[in-house]
Length: 287
Ligand SMILES: Cc1cc2nc3c(=O)[nH]c(=O)nc-3n(C[C@H](O)[C@H](O)[C@H](O)COP(=O)(O)OP(=O)(O)OC[C@H]3O[C@@H](n4cnc5c(N)ncnc54)[C@H](O)[C@@H]3O)c2cc1C
Image 1 (cartoon, protein in one colour):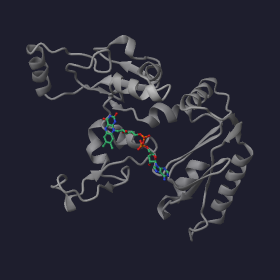
Image 2: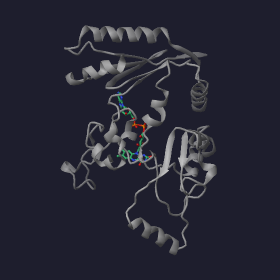
Image 3: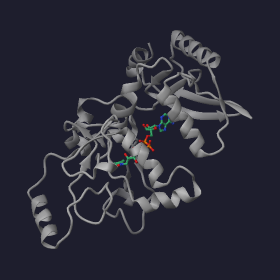
Image 4: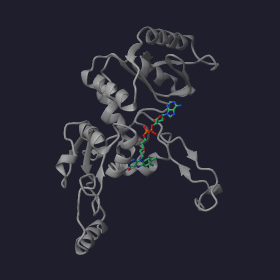
């Protein structure tokens, strides 16, 4: 059985009162183009199959998928690139600004006992606001997931961990790291003095100083960070920017998806939420 995988997108401007006619026409044209370029693909029988197809496609760069990436937020800027600014970036528009529901036993120091629930809004998602620590997780968890979901065991995912990674680490369990991918992983450069004391204490207690993304996770380590020469290496920098030259890929930022209709085909219905002062940038982005 065949199913059509097709990523259509169009912005519904009908409800907005002050949208220029040329913008409406632009989206109608965009929709038309995507509607005529849909892709036919085999129906995947399991998760692995589908991701294999995506990966084969990415490697072969055949352009069989037409992809429109829709993102509610904007692009990164110089400010988000600076790791030390992370605590300030989460107070900006790059955070959706969610709050947890009022709690009984925690978040007691917060207004209405509601903790902040930070989620990134921007091309690169939460990797634009996060703390950049590169921590893969524990092998046994992956193996547990993999026992019911083929392709998610540690050995299978390790292939992809290595493939996307460009590691540059002082202490490295070499067979667990890749060096030709686009996600840069480095040692953190600046540490407070206290870190030296922790390392010394660990040694005194006979603990290993190790690569916690390697064979053994029981020990001490400084942080491996998703940075490139000391600046944030977000998912956007690692995976979106390098592909932006592809003809079958288009990225629309400041485009909030409000509905996804799935029938035989996949429709992504996006509603544009650009504010008055940002409309110009939309035109720049979509050309
Ligand atoms: C403060 C903070 C610190 C963190 N620190 C670390 C760390 O040090 N190391 C680590 O490994 N992980 C860290 N994380 C977690 C990590 O960043 C996230 O797990 C990861 O980015 C999640 O990826 P995702 O693709 O699932 O979702 P996200 O990265 O959140 O991406 C979802 C994207 O979809 C967009 N979107 C959502 N709804 C719509 C819509 N309706 N229309 C259009 N676009 C939409 C959002 O704007 C966002 O860009 C941290 C997270 C936070 C919040």
